[in-house]
Amino acid sequence: MKKFKSIFILLAGIFSALPAMAQTSESSWVSQFQQMDSNQLTLLIIMAVILGVIILLLILMIYLMSFMVAVFKKDSPELAQEPSWWDEFKLKHITGKLKPVGGKEEKELLLDHSYDGIVELDNHLPPWLVNVFYVTMAFAVFYFSYYTVLGIGKTQLEEYAEEQRIAAIQIEEWNSLALISIDENTVTFDATTQALESGKNIFNANCVACHATDGGGGVGPNLTDEYWIHGGSINDIFSVVKYGVVEKGMIPWQDQLSPEEMQNVSSYIQTLVGTTPLNPKAPEGEKYEPAIEQPTDALFEDELEFEPVEAEGENQ
Image (cartoon, rainbow, N blue to C red; front, side, top):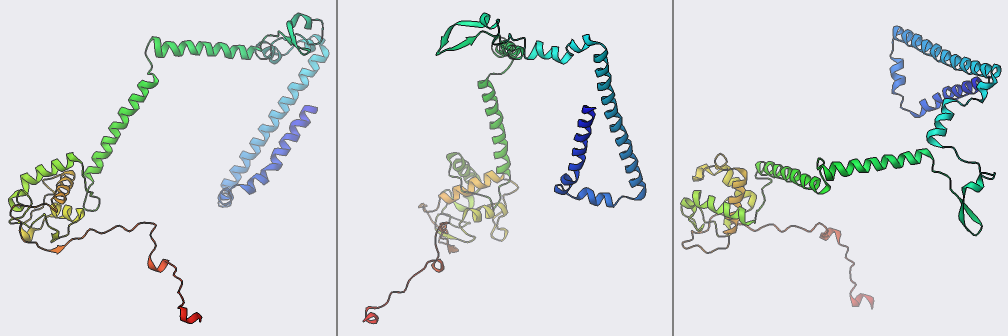
């Protein structure tokens, strides 16, 4: 009867805590509950009643089983003395059989040394700890055989090399996608030797007829001075190379050159500025002056606080 009362009190505590838990949770289910029609509410009530009946039957079965066990133990004293399966399992695999401390059997466990009156007993380790030790030994043998003896598994160095290989492939794919997506807004000056050599070869193959080998100009404008018709930034040069200037005879190269190649030749053209060609063409367009980037931590004049200095005559 005591077990039944404890179970009933536990369930009552759980059900009494449900309203408090509902207040702290979201109220979305409340709105869904209010939107149900009469048929859905009836079905929900029936399901709740069935669930409650099942819970009550389970509680009744547990109580009857405990009552029957108590009756059997009372009628048969040998059953009361017989340990349950859990007691046997715990004794065999968890705690083990320990000799009592303080009795006569303690002398059999005493070791032949002591420290400041503190003696040490030679009790065996609990079975669960011994089993864990055996499992670790078996795992160590399997691990060593799998990775070292048989060589099936990859070592840490091999896994690291594989991760580096995969990362290199991903970086190459990312770079290829980044090069494909280059346009007049994302183009940058590439000062690497490989890019400038590529741009020089493209320039010599396609641009020398109009701009001369040294960029001094001919049919096209001079590319070595500071004057530009359509702007001298890397973005402006890339835009002219990509879309061309049809009215001036400059054809668009976006169908013949890749975005990377157009960036390379635009970067090479910028390296021609300041060089001395053999027969330079007269400057055309407006002088291009690169914009000086303002430091992010710079203060403007309106942000500076100046204190007026009084004249000496005013103080006298």
